[in-house]
Amino acid sequence: MKRTLGLLLICLLFASVSTFAQTKTTTTKKSPKPIVGKVVSLNEVATGNFVEWTKSEADTAAFYGTPFVLMVGTGSKAKIYIVLNEDGSFAGRKLSKYAFNEKVGVVGKNVVKNGLNFIIAETIEAME
Image (cartoon, rainbow, N blue to C red; front, side, top):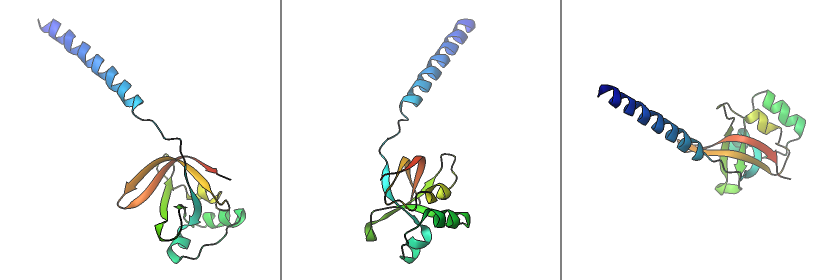
């Protein structure tokens, strides 16, 4: 009796684990639609003085620690997104390579934490 009950529990355990694994993989679909905006420095957002960046200026600024973010929209209705890599590190250096483009698209997962908008980026590309 104990042996039969033990085998039954083991079979149920394997069935539930395989079902859980299948459910977990099917519910994590990513949206291929990019969030499109302009790359600006966080300093520009704070002061309101926006600069047209060249590629070399943006690379130099990122090297010295200027944080670059994605701004979607303009004026008081603009949303600021802090872009992170998939490992959780800040992707400002990656964004600086697109600072001279008018439109940049970021594909990834949106997260709002403590009132701040984050994008966990899968890809970043110019939309021109």
